[in-house]
Amino acid sequence: MLIFNIGHLHPDFVMQSQGASAALLTGASSFFEFTSAFESQRLPGAAAAARKAAQIFDQAALSFRRLAGLLEAMPSAGNWTRDVEPGLAASQVGLSIDDPVVQVLIGIILDGKIHEVFLQGALDIGEFSGRLRDFASRVEGGNVVLDDEYRMGHELLRSWSILMTQGQYVSSVCYLAATVRI
Image (tube, rainbow, N blue to C red; front, side):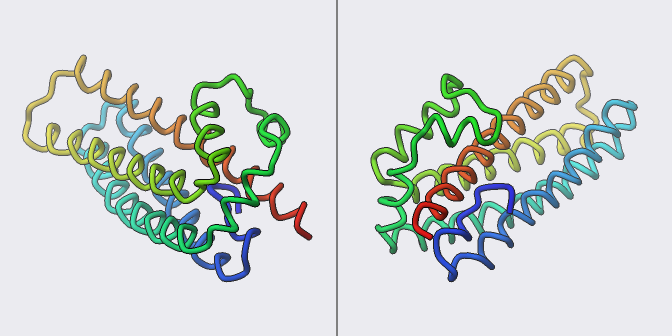
């Protein structure tokens, strides 16, 4: 489990965590189909891949919302993750503790609200999905201005990078919290 890993925190979370992570990574596959088609200026193929990715990401967002609910119902998870040293968690996955994305996560986790991290992740994935759908609609509707589409493509790549940073850091925090408890 590489992304937003909470399976190590409690055995009941393993399947849900694996399913959410798998949906996110399956969506990534379609997202990279989109970027490949877009880079090759195959706009109809890019639009189809963007729609496919958006559908998968919608499922991932739903899975992360469910995980947030499970975590909220188990306050001890927030306590376990709060006890993880932030710098160690960042270094385990090659991130800087000074990264603004990591800093936001640290603040939430130190408040003992790991469930809010998963809820925010669900919201971010949902927004990402919506932006993919917007891209597909523009292209399918013939409303193509390549400068705008390139800007959108770069924004989507940046958003993907942020999602992966969030996932790596949270996965590291959850793993470290679990190893301390074992």
